[in-house]
Length: 315
Image (cartoon, helix red, strand yellow):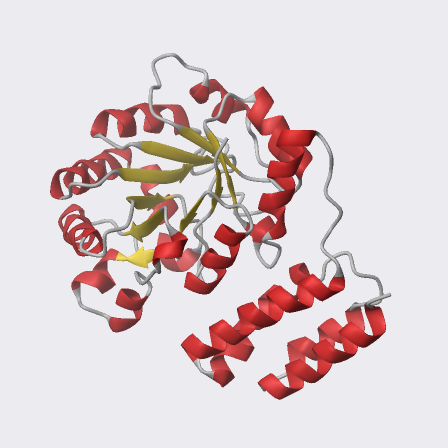
């Protein structure tokens, strides 16, 4: 069963996507990209489309609420020759929803379908979509959306088991994911997403909900080994031991250095702070080092701390 890395803003850049591919992710997705910014030729958004061959298969994800601009943006994405173009119909964050994109389209399914039809018509590569159960608990409409998106021509659907109002809180509800996946009339692959944090979670979704694949988001952030661990568990039934401190430091350092190479030292070091918690999760007595890493502003400061971690916590 394929394992996919979810698109996450400020997380799934080229460097991290490549690391996850090296550690067992079968497919990766870019950060979401504004269709409006692409058609306006905003350089920052164009840079987000960059990927290297070793990341394949890869999907470039776009969002927006204007069918014409989404179609034009999709054509620009197609020029980069990704494996799929993914439509973001589920992002719950305010800056996306307030512009009518992402999860906002859960409240206007007709517009969501028009966008999808225009994009499918405009490009010659597979179009996929990612969405949520509904806007809130009183407006669960994922089943209607799934079948209408299928009819509109998408090749795969990823469903996150939360509503927009839940954001990332509470628990993901997989029951509707399973209901759609097991429906004989739903013929395209359905990918399950939400609360896949351990190999046991992945196995439970695989065996109990009929999904065609599993997408992992926040749990993989700074912990790319999760993909390897899930695959090992699927094939052997055994849980791999967690990576030792030497491997964690090595992959973390490599990730940081590549980020600095792309972003420059100041921004690269600052942006990387979000990853330290997961790279070293489960390591006893790490908290004082994590606090210092969050405060570090230069690469040499980070290197000094990592060397101390290696010397003091390797036993």
